[in-house]
Amino acid sequence: MRTEVSPKRVRVYAGGQLVADSKSPVLVWEVPYYPTYYLPSADVLATVTPSGDVVAGDVTIPGAARRDGDLVRLEFSAMDEWLEEDEPIYVHPRDPYKRVDILASSRHVEVRIDGETVASSRQPRILFETSLPPRYYLPLSDVRMDLLRPSTTTTSCPYKGTASYWSVGEHSDVVWIYRTPVPESQKIAGMACFYNEKVDLVIDGEPQERPETPFS
Image (cartoon, rainbow, N blue to C red; front, top):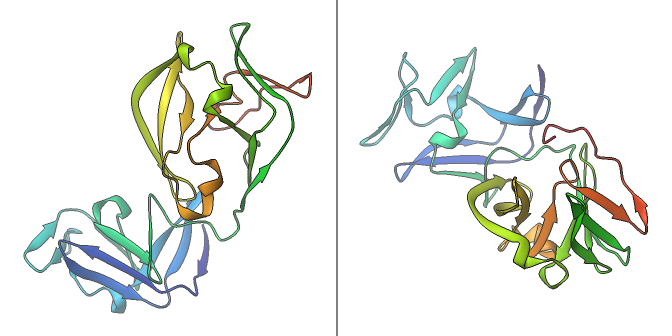
């Protein structure tokens, strides 16, 4: 596995207690898509039992830690809060080699599902994210909202925030929106985006091939 010491100060909280405070956290890419933090055991202030429980004050979090030599892996979702420097992070640590750019564009973007045009816009915001196809975020006024059916699905992204979804016909969760994205992604706030992998996109009159990604 690829590893790298991060220059960021990382603090972890659970049950109102400071669980860890490290100025030399280690990023470990357990999977190719994103890293997780392993913290020097000396920087873990909570008690980690032999069975992997984390004991912070009066709170015990079962199975939330794993030792790997002199490092401790804390289960990200089991903790209440993670801070890089003084800013919270969500879902997982951000990959220092991943970049997200959001650019205003005048390209003509058409979205078709089962042969029907469900969106047509000449004012998209295009989100370019390392290792993923461009994502076209469209104003809701350019989307056939009458064809969208609200979904209960939500997902979270460390680079953009929490998304909610719509379905179209038999196609579940094919459209999403970040209503209150993280500050770095404010340009896409309140705009709708369709999975390139699941709809037919036409850009400036040219049909686009559906990309193959983990979301296909």
